[in-house]
Length: 250
Length: 314
Image (cartoon, rainbow over all chains, first blue to last red):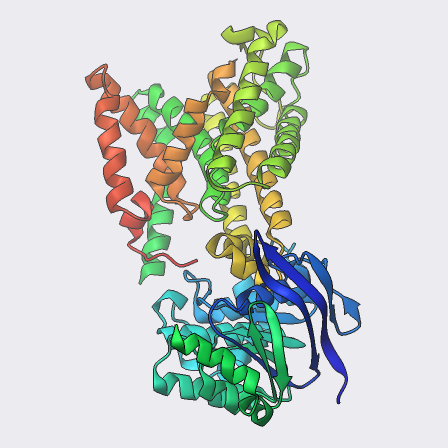
């Protein structure tokens, strides 16, 4: 297996009596697209939250590249190359699409303690931002306020913001949630063009998307990872089937 | 179109303010010189509050504290015979910025209602500190011994000269402010206001940017305070009273939050309304209240938004 980029060891997070992450061990190789699936309430979002730095684990360690990032907060992790999209679309609604991406570039390039030159005329911010918008197919919508973009476009914008920072790892929390069939297929096609260029950790309910994109899949149930394997291995795993059948019967 | 209309409004406003002294002289109404100078001083305070309120989403309910600090930074040296304006005004800005640094470092760890209450509490603490300064008049305040001296370059005792000094400072402050909010720094602060979780996720740690903005706003408030002490030639702890903080906030909201120029219109409008309405009836606040409510409800970007007719961005 290729070099490990993200390594999770014994990650544990408790909310009162609920064990949302139960001694999770997981390795993600550089260039891999790793999907995390599981029934609702399995703890996928809690795991993403701990990876992004929004939640502090109660125990365990997260290594990213050659660094222990367990104690770093979200902005620090982002500057180290851990980019994310949110389950519920999260953009700067009052700013144009281009501004949104330019802000992401700005957060990663140089100091923001610059008080004089207009940021909107700064080619070192605008050019990479325009390129990132183009890569997700939003270049024609660059000047539109983010709030006025269609839902699918806002999701694309989030991806552009993540890409603009040239991340080492992309955390995608349900990137096709709430999209129509067309939009969702377009997003999956686009994400598949990123494969191998960027390491991706993907949480998703849409099984078509997962089985199209993932190199490996981990299945979470009740805060634990019960299986990790290639898509065919997961498809054939009895324990996984039982977990999903169990959910269907509820 | 929006841009040209905006430029037009700004140019007209600037010319109108510049024409106040000759018109006041022609009509023999020196009172208006005094009134408009007062408006511009409060406009500087309101613009500085807008930097953090409108652009940073920091609802600071203690902005009058800096007016007071700035005023005392002029009054106390003057009481001890130090009348050098550079020194007094420099002290006003530095002391206000320093106090803002302390207040901000503590209050910015909270948000929402807690933030409002902590900034209010700090301002009230300073208000009571002012009352306890018996040497400097306690709760009665004291007369300013003399207006700030600038070694013969400008003489603030000359009402018209003082007026144009205030106008120049206001214009300079607006020019610097509009550079600031469009700079990298300004964009980082505005991003944190727009969506803090998103700002953090792309790699901004908002606190240092917000704190710096808070300190800049404090310094601006302090400068306004130094001007106010020279304007009234009197200083009292009332400069720091929480109702004064509320008044400055009203100027910002009335004129248009996050517009920078709006608070100038807000300051002019509020003080003009006070002046006109209080001449009509002793219960003028009964009329003022509903006007403010209507503006808040129906003009999202305040009076400036109505004049310029632009939609909000960022």
